Length: 293
Length: 282
Image 1 (cartoon, rainbow over the protein chains, first blue to last red):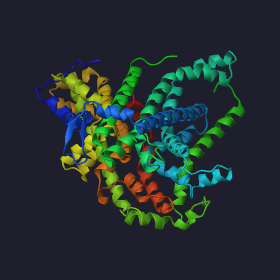
Image 2: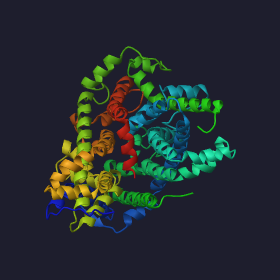
Image 3: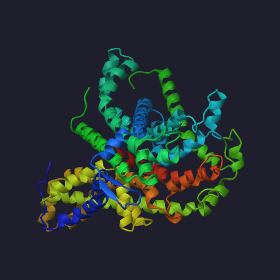
């Protein structure tokens, strides 16, 4: 859709887009090009000598067992965050949708964790699950679970999964609720007249009609788990113990800023860029033709 | 309601209340911990009702941070966070609304190229270009400045798209009428487009304010002096490593302070928040 009524000016439109384009060029495009360039260079720590090495950085990256392990951790982490997060928020949304009394109150109480910074969410759960003093740890111990994420890698991963889901619940909840409220009530009523119970109605009518929303949220949650959870990891486990929570974004940061491996870090950035581009394309294809059941 | 099933209603409320309790639990515990003394927190299990040290703890962190970790005053950090959130929110909205106006109301060479350039920035989150972006900011001498903290985050493809979508729904007759009356494009922008965009601006403001306040990775890289820390970074710096040494009463007080402004914005502007959230993702 385009406008027919237009204004004319030789310079004004350029002046209007200039700030946005300038910021994009300086802080988005130039660094991205640099990342591409560095990814094919070998540089020593003092940047005295640089050498063009073709794809050696990528070859050594994919030959690196810790990078492969980091890929596996990230995959597991995003599957857990997306699967558990979406199921729990769908449950809340379905119940909140049908509640007559107190609906607004429930909604208000469920949406505000969106305001909590990921790093703060991580620290809140760190406190609850601290091996020494956490009250959740105390509760777990009293039922016989020995909780110590400092030494147990699975528990460390669980800690960041919980914090990441907690932070994202309100977002998923709002989108599911909006999706549910868009479903025509007449369909549900017709099914009820035909004798379908609540559970049957949900699985045969509501859930299929909700699939576009669910798919959209799936992509958003995977992107979230890949990129926005850096703060959670950095504020809680710092990738440990022994790399059990070292997600890809955290490894880029560690290799670049702590180990000063410019080429390796840049190569990882390029891999991540490819992942974001793929996810963004999937997301926009969805916008164009919505998934149908 | 299709049919009446009292039992199902009870189940519903129980699940919702249980869910809310679970969602609220970490925040409640943080609130309680921020009113206790360190000794009370270290007594396992910690008591679950508020203590009497609240005022002391909050006054202590606001004025001089923690003792064993970072000693930067949280009051200063709150100010930094506020500046960062406001500049990012207002900056994103301003530069997006004018570029969207240009895209919709003008035809000019390279228009498509510019539009695609903005679109592509969606695919380049800070996380994937950390090191080179840091280098650009360092070369420009913007480390430890508010400009360095905010300017690189100010481009916004989503806000530009949202405004573009909205401008396309403004009837053509309005622009025609304005032209016939002799109003130039900027006059039309100020007197017609801006007032019509009020709710969109409010909705975006809520989303972008929270985005700016909650930034983590970027301030972590760009700030090296304590006087430039934002609240979210400050909390992390208060944990000295090894949770036994951490002053949890002060950390939790800071966490509550870090959550307060964005939570207030959401609760007070709930209507715009929901609108902004749902529409920026379309």
